Every structure is written in structure tokens, then in C-alpha cells.
Image 1: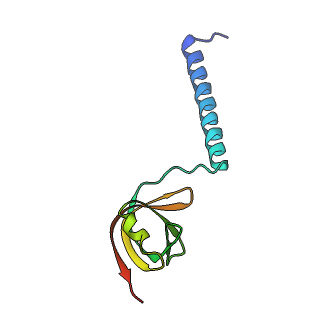
Image 2: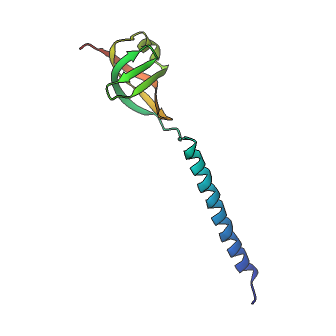
Image 3: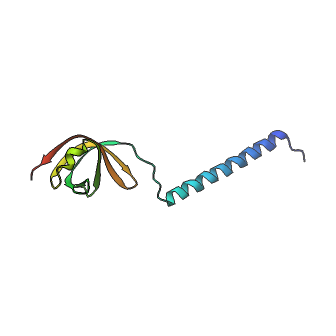
Length: 109
């Protein structure tokens, strides 16, 4: 049987692709097993909840929002108060980070 160089290169290229995709799939699975989560983009949202002593807003939605970044200093002075905050939030590794406070108001109930 006669094999041409072109056919051998095509077969080797196909095998190389299969092996490459296998390694990518294995690496992706290992990353997921170790809890790696790709960071998400910032989302502008409004959160209502109580500022606690742990530098967080305990949201009415049951989520906690870590206060950091621009505008957060004023919120940290409102521990125990219910607030409505609009700002950029990043969700990463199961946590919510309030990165930039655009506006906020104290809610009197």
C-alpha cells in the first residue's frame, strides 16, 4: 500500500487536534473541581438592605454585598441602618463585591 505524504500529514494533524482538545477538556474539568470560577463583569444594580459591622450590606434578597471601592466609606458609617444603594457589583467565587457606589439613601421604616 502506498501512502502519500499529504495523507500522512492530514492523519497526524487530526490526531494532534484530538489530543489537544482532550488536554483542554481535562484542564477545564480540573479547574472546575478546584472551584475556579471565571470573574464576572461589573453589573450596575440597586441593592436594598442593612449595613452591618462586617463591611457588608445584608440584602433584602438574602445576599451579602462586600462594601469596597469608591463611595463605600460613607456607607460604613451607617452600620445598623437600612439603605438603598446603586453601584457596580462584581460576583466572584460566590461573593458579591460592591465596587463603586453611585448613589445611596437611608430607608426609614
